[in-house]
Amino acid sequence: MNSLVEDVVAALKQVTPSLARWSGAIARQLRKYNVALEGKSSGNANTDALTLADLTVQELLVAGLRDGDPVLRRCRIEAEEANGDLAAFDPRGALTIALDPIDGTKQFRDRTGDGYAVMIHLRDDAQLYYSLVFAPESGPSGTWTQVYGETVKTGPDETALTAAECLERMAAVDKRTRPDSNKIYLIGFQKKDPLRARMVTDAGLIGFAPDDMPGSIYPLLASGEFGGSLIHSPNIYDYPVSLQIARALGGDSVWVHNGQPVHFRETWLDDRADMLRLPGIVATADSPEKLKILVDLARDWSPIRYED
Image (cartoon, rainbow, N blue to C red; front, side, top):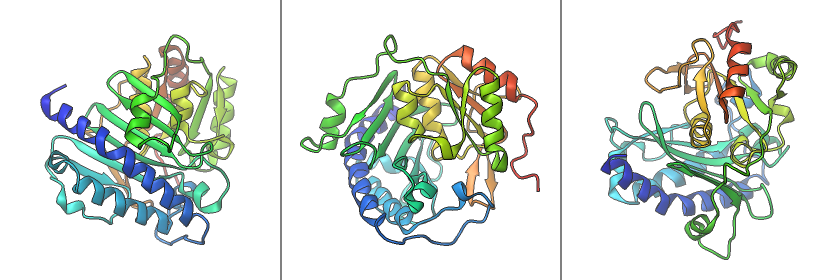
């Protein structure tokens, strides 16, 4: 890890816990009201949901990063929405800070579960260096997932402590005692999500379509309640956190058509959803054995997201 990466990770570990906790509190309050907005038209409700909370939380996150350690402004910023002082960051930076202000917006908007989350991560064109996920309504006071280096942490928030102190004191996941789950999250296959989930189950794992998920995939993967995911053309704001978790646990994230590790040098703009995506289908798992099953299963599936 070079000195710039070390400096940026240190700054993110200092500033992002409070930002995520404050953002979660705002999201919890806004969720009580009708805050749905128009703006996306991919035809998939999981992608198209957009709320005032997305915009409000992103405004806070971007402002907090801008006003934090000056080293953060040396990074590029990629945010799922278009608002906030994005111009304060270096568009040519070697490192990218990515934001998903409300991951799981459909569930948030429809009040159908507690799996939505505030997400921040740091990467370059091939590696993840830091991830922070806060699920505000998972558990009594929220659930954290944090990843840096080989360290993976996940657990409940403790509001008697500062957010940074809570994470600092939280024990890291022990790979030796972490449960070994065959549950796999699937998304992005449009109307075929349930079918693809059944095919994963038939292959010897246990597939979960989006509507069947018991919560956010990130704490579930970190804790061992889930073993991976299979995603069609994942977006670059939230999916990379799964990649970092899997690699830190001894697994990987690869393209199914060639089995090669995922990188971020090739993306495409999904005009329907107004977001950047990786091409093709990506398999992520905490072990090479599960990864092989997913790759073998999905290798010949269509790499085209929208076939209408």
